[in-house]
Amino acid sequence: MNVPRSINRMLAALTACIVLAARPASAATDVSLLDLVETEFGYTTIADQYQHPVAPQRLLDGARVGLIAYLRSRGIANPQVGMIHARPDGRGAVPAIEQQIGLAIERYGSRVDALSLVYASIRGEVAALNDPYSVFFTAAEVKGFSAAIDGTAFGGIGVQLTFDDAHKQWLADSVFDGSPAAKAGVQPGDAIAAVDGASLTGLDNAHIEALIRGKIGTTVRLSIVRAGTALDAPIAIVRAAVTPPDVTVRLLPDGIGYVALRSFALDAGAKVHAALVQLAKQGARGYVFDLRGNGGGYESAAVHVASAFIGSGPIVANEGRDGKRRVSPADGDAVPVLPLVVLVDHDSASGAELVAGAIQDRHAGTLVGTRTFGKGVAQTMFALPDGSAIKLTTARYYTASGRFIDRIGLEPDVEVEQPAGSEMGVPKHDPQLDRALALLAR
Image (tube, rainbow, N blue to C red; front, top):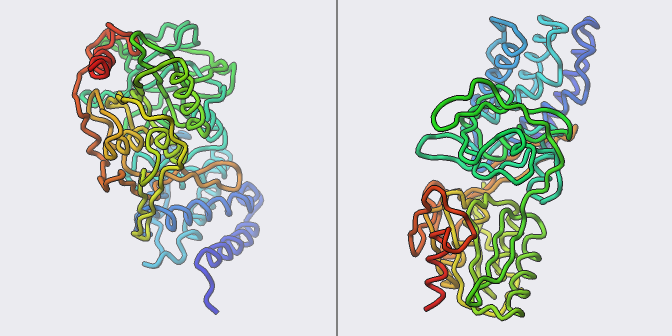
């Protein structure tokens, strides 16, 4: 009988549990069955679900690097972690990782924690992918990440981030009025070099936000560079309940309806549809749909949002590990057609590009602003047994006409730069919005 590889690995994990249980109590009892299952699920998820096959040795080398990094963080100067090997087909990989975890506990005792070693190995495996969008989250980080996308209140500081590609640094793009960050002195344009001493180099927006968010009442420390000069000490900020901006709706002069969407929460489609209908009832003769600074969210929500402007036909196509493309069509919930301008910038990414690309490809509106970020890959969250999770790239997506925009972005139909000091969403103080209004006035 052919036994699936995942079952073989699970049996191997259970066998390893028995072996570890036979070791001295001081070294073995810290390793639980859950730890072993967590190790199994982590490796198998990455090996079997990533967007393309990955050599087992690459993941094993990553696990070793992760274990060494964790041991060094515990003050162990020269960690002893053996090379981890498996067969070319991956057989024996998980037991080999578990062996090194067990040996680390034997060698370093109370200086290490079994679950932290498991997490370190999984983080190392994810890092070995060299994929900025694949991230390991603890259970607490999962809650913060989900809360941010869903638009619910969470423990945070009230800062919206943007990436400065020219200087390769993360900036506080906006600081919410009255937020903990504003009260602590964080200013728009501040570069964030580190969070609680951890460098942000190589991390994506989701991971950084997970570091910044946390339990209400706890403190996070941001290392700030302002106008090119590092502040003398990190800024300590006490987290509070923060509800991120969601949909902004207003009727501008001359009958232009303005809708700004900041993220694609599950209910984004319904909210955008309701906003457009509301504006139409108020006599709107055209729409400005603002997707600047929108980093994405749920793909299903993006399809629903695009469907408000596109009544039928393809919106996006996904191509998974099997190489087959699957088309997501409009859901038929379109609003009455009015002239449309979509505002985009370099921080319009993922779901925002999906929507803007569909509108551009289907000639449903005009794109104004600057080239978008260029994220043409989709991620799936895979929950692990203890509530932690791996956000893993599982597919490429293509616009309605078949364009692949990853690391390319969308070129707007009308390019307008946004100078420093502009007030987004405020006519006569927002050059991109002003150009959109001029186009709709014709």
